[in-house]
Image 1 (cartoon, rainbow, N blue to C red):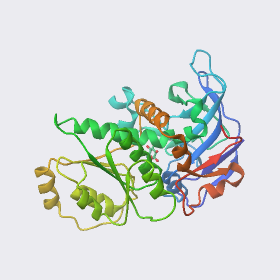
Image 2 (image 1 turned 45 degrees about the horizontal axis):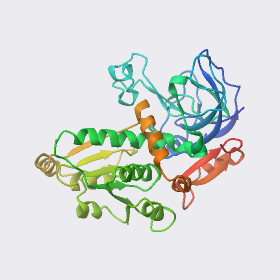
Image 3 (image 1 turned 180 degrees about the vertical axis):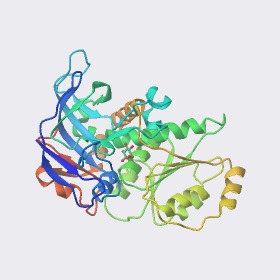
Length: 352
Ligand code: BGC
């Protein structure tokens, strides 16, 4: 079978490989891939900047935003042949730490977690793969191919969950204004959930053309292009920083409003230094009760919340988020950025 593999740490090593059919351990389901979303993390892995191969191997099967169909379900599971499923990305560490033991692998304390297609376990970018039923999330058949958006939605469902839990530290806190930085798929899905919560949502991105401004407007949110000055003007109650860009991260942590919560959800590469007034930041954070926190990955409850968010969303809008569908034969094109890209997906076989 065909699989997209990469040698982590080696730029340009990505290729379409011929791999043996997957071994399906007892209790696991055999899944055939329907689609695979491409995200910034995949591009970083391909660039040699991120990613780890399984122990004892030098190549990793890429892909963590999956959508697949059950070919064979194990007895006693609630999966059946034909079900559309999304594979959870992270697996608990083997120790396990207290968080992983409690099903909160997204909060793993010792860093020994693994991630399909990213960290030490092969990903979902193969024509077929084995999946444990406990780590398979069923997709409403009415969503079809749009189910490929579940994983990025789970990441923002967690960011929202934690933001609101932190907000609950104050009995009277009622957020009104939200700023999402970055109108990529993660930012747009964060904005979608913000609108579903009836908040006033603003989205900041650099572009002035292409599909992003209209996608934001169609959510009933306000699109801003340009620099981080908008953060100072809006003084939002919540900032969901989805770019990882230094300038925006800095602006978000210094310029959000009083009692604000800034969630950093974009993974940046690091290594760039800027002058930062630590005392000034400390003073305004203390006097303003500000919170800045990081959020990564998602647990089962967040996948469930994400499935509900997608089910409530306008399907036409979700469909427009998928701006390019690339057949497996032309897989390279999926990993090459083009103007107007929002979410690019690889399609395996016929659409769902
Ligand atoms: C994935 C997350 C993962 C994170 C860090 C993101 O692209 O969506 O599931 O935890 O990368 O590896």
